[in-house]
Image 1 (tube, rainbow, N blue to C red):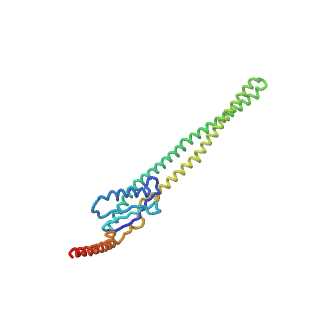
Image 2: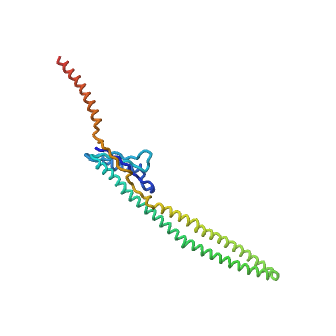
Image 3: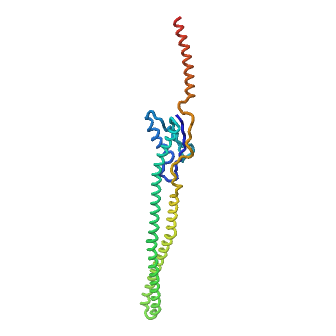
Length: 260
């Protein structure tokens, strides 16, 4: 048996959908270690899948096989499984972000073509209304000057009409200011925020944000067999032989004493 080790990069930069290293290790352990325990006479096996100490973006895979090539192939099979699964996840993330960009574009288009246009029409209408009301107010002022000496009662009524008209002009002016404020807010803050959000999402669509799982470096192989452990066998054989020799000496001595 040959012992192989491999560092495998698990890219965690693409969102919450991608398994973090610990979750990935648990999943792979179930699939490639726990589920394979009952299979007998295997030429290859994954013996360990773990997260290196103080690492979050890497996993380490260890395999045993009757040859280095088979052990490497076993590791590459695990990596291929991870890559295929993460390819689907990354594609889903990419499609979701593209959909977000399309939604933002629709919002921007709606603001420019509908909301701002309606506000501009309202501003134009309110401006014209204020202009007409001021014209009426000027006429009332003229009439008041003409009749204030000859018809005090009618003059008083005109003054009341002037007051009501002035209050209405004030209200329309306030509405105009509010409408202009809404338009300015849409053109500056809202559209700017939407453009900034779209650019941020677009930056996340760059290729380096979609790097899939990959092998870091090369698969490390051990040229010395992992099994059988020759040194352990020699030590066990020596200790066993020593014990059996002592036992045999005592046994022969016992047989000799029985004969005597």
